[in-house]
Each structure stands twice: as structure tokens, then as C-alpha cells.
Image (cartoon, rainbow, N blue to C red; front, side, top):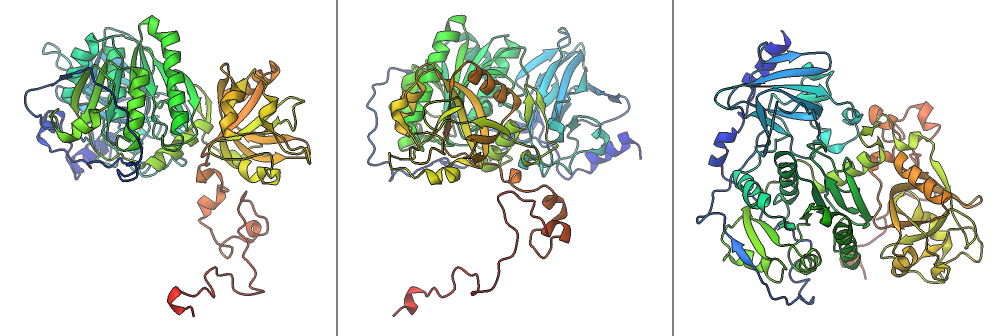
Length: 621
């Protein structure tokens, strides 16, 4: 069977027919209402809310309540043939007739050869500009959809998809979000870094709702004001911010500043970070966050509830950077927020709107009436001038939040450059780098360690430092300030690094501190005073540059868990051997798993069962 025949068979034999863009409005939306609450209303009863007088007006998109559409597309509307699909060594040429579209998974470069195409039903690209557009997509996000948008005079569009080698195409065995889609890739595209989704699978495409596009082309285009997007969890806030940014960049050739204040599931920030990213028309079309110039701050947690004061402090810092560097250049600010909009989350949101002072507020909701009680409760006490209600997506993502966060960490620590990655190894298969630390105030290296939300005093037991330090992700800051008086030093043994209390961290860093990136501490050598670390090459270069300039290095940690796949020896995955009895003699004789002991426990001295001899309450006398 030829490649074309096999692809046609996949299309015809698919059990599920695709949801066509023209028919998408006929489908009813399903959503989970109020699924985002990170604490109940009862828990927030004792927390005072802000009393703010609103000075605002409401824009109603339509006089009636629109039908919210379930825009779920799982495969291309494209029947491959020798006429419309041509394979080359490093590229694939595709001819799209009127009404046809393709959904693409992977990394690729797009060149428009003839006519024009519409991306995600959001913006258009045409052949008049010879620019080649790069697409960087991950399976945890919706996949790009390219449809024919040519005029009646030219009924077809011809495009070329070109291999985009970044090393990310080898991430299938690492990332959780790609595990289910590995077997769905068509063998015809094995030599390409991308795959045209011919048959319905686990991935879905991104088809922007028409009401959103209408807002993009009218209010968003005309207004130069700051824009903030709010809504429940899974309402589509990140998708909206990305889509409006894409429209303004590629349809209107504008530069955009994105402030991402969601530390848990951000497409623009590094793990545990909040960011201000600058996106230009020359940037990558579909991104995974690390491809744009950006200013980041290390927050340390996945939710604003863990450190609300620090969360608001970083929000102020990011907004100050925008006003000082980019506002006068005419860059419009778009603010993405977490989905926690009840209880204390609502109080934080009110303070965020007070900081960024948005003129335009977008509420993604399931009820398009401004008089609805749920909408009134959300908007109460927020700072804004104009509010616009738009339909939310309210669909569960293809991967869970925990999977997204794990994949985000793996992507970060396996990157080798701006657009280069290496997933061919586990971190523990390579020797770690070394960085010296100070035990006292003299010397050069890591000046101090600070653990957020962790109380300590002068009686701190430094023998616990190794447990608090090793096998965790840390944020790295450089500073010129010197605050020896706030350091907690190991004066007894002079073995361990200095500690900085969480409450003294801002004093230690000072106003001129700079966030350098993230690192993983593998272990500590107390004899020679150095840490074994893993960090991306660019972060390593920044640390070396800071030390050469005599700057002080401060390590800061919040949660900091390492992806589980990086803790285990890779051969255990391929062999499927997990117990001591299953391990071959060559491996059972020598333990290869760092931090894990697979040797069976001795039965001498009793049975190793934790609950043995523990009586239930009813059996006690």
C-alpha cells in the first residue's frame, strides 16, 4: 500500500468525524462550573476584602445571550492524494482547497507558496510576504490548525511545511503529555519533526471562537490600554492571551507585552516563576514560553495562596519593569491571571487590578448577562474602567496540571539554547557542575540560602542542611548588596552554607538584584565547601559571569520538587524490573539508582510491617 493510500485509509476509516469549523457553532458547550476554587468560601470568611468604589462601564457584545460553541477538532479535514500532498527530503508541500484545513503536531516552519491561510481561525498569513514562520508546539496545548483562506478568485492555498530541528522531537520518551500520542503518529512522517493529524486521537486543535476574533478586530485593535483577563479555571485565559497576542502581532504587526501571573500553569514562564515577556511579529507563532525575551522573577510555588505577600510584591516588580522600559515604547500590556477568583483569591485579584490599573477587563464566563449574580460577585471590588464579557472555553485540558508542571521542568532543564534541546539522556547520567559556597562572610561563591515560608533562628541545626538542600530546584539571584548581619552562620563547625530567613530575603537581595534562572542541587560537599548542581548552559554562564564580577549568589527555594523520571536509572524503564527478585544479577549486585535502595530488607528481628501490632480503637482496653 502506498503512503497516500495509507493516509486516505486513515481518514476514511476514522471512527470519529472531525468537527468542522463551519459546524462548530451547532455544538453545545460543556463546562465545569466553579472548578477552580483553591479554598472554600468558609475558609475565607475571616479574611477582609477591599472596599473599592468602581468607576467603570460595561460593553455587551450582543443584545442576546450567544450560544457558546464547543470548538473541539480532533483531526484534519483533508484527504491526502498525489495532487495535494508532495513529500520532499526535508519538507512537505500541501495544497488546501476551499473549506479544507489541517491540524499539525510537532515543530515545523511554515512557508506560504500561494494564496493565504488562516491560523486557528484567528489571523491570516499570505504569500505576499516571503517570511518563513516557525511553529513550536507541545502536546499539552491545543495544536495549530491551518485552513484555506484564499479569495474566490484563487480557490486554493499552497503551503510548505519544513522540518524544524530543535531536539524537542526526541522528547516523546520523557514528557508525560506526549506519552499517549507517540503511537498515533503516522509512519509516513517518521523523518519529519511534525505530523499532520489525519486520524482522530488524543490531541485536539485550537479553533478560536468567532466572538473572540470579533473582539480582537475591533476593541483590541483600537484600544491602546492595558488589558487583564480573568475567569474561572479552564475558562481559556491563557488561550485568550495567546490568541489576542497572535492577532495583534501577525494581523496588525504590533509588539505586545505579556505579564503572566499564573505560576502554576504558565505558557510563558519558567517553573515556579512569574514573567513579563516581550512578543514581536518576528517571534515564533506558537510558543512554549522560553522563546521570547522576557523578565522573570522567582516566586517559588504553584499557587498564590502559598505566599500571597511575595506574589503581590513580584506583581509590582513586573509592572514597574513594564512602565519603566516598555510603556513609553507603545507596547500594549496583556495580563494573564490565575483561575482562583473566590474567597482570598478574589482579594488577591482585587489587589492585582489595583497594581496594574487595567483600563480594559475581559471576563470569560458561561453567563453573558452582566446582571448575573456570579458575574457581579466576580467584578465587585475590582479596579477597571471597561469590562467586556466573552464566552469561556470551559474544557478540561489534554494533560493534568501536575503533568503540565512536570513537563515544564523537564523542558527547562533539558534546553541547550534558545531553540535547542537534548532529551537523549537523564540528568543523573552526566556529571554535575560545582559551585562553591561561603561558610561565613569571606570567600566567593553562594553567599546564602533562603527557604521560603520556613522559619529558623540562631539555634538552627545545620546538620539538617543536606536534607533541605539536595534533590530540589532552587532559584538563583545575584546581588551587589552586603547584609552580613542578617546571615545565620554555622559558627560551631564552619561546614555548611549561610542561611537567610525568609523575612530577611528582600533586605539581602536589595533593589538591584537580578534573577539568573533555576538550578537543581544534587548534593553538598561539606569538606571542600561546594555544591553539585545541574542547570541549563545559559544559566551556568550567567552564574559564572556574576561570580567573576564579584557579585554575591543567593539561592532561594519554595516547593522545588524534581520530576520523578529524573530520579530513576533509565534502564529500569526499559527492563520493567522494579523488585529485587526481578533485577538481573548484574544490576542487583550494584545499585544504579541514586537516592533509592532496591535491596530487600532483612526479616531478622521481626516482620517489616508498619501496621503490625497496632490495634484499632475498638480493640483497645
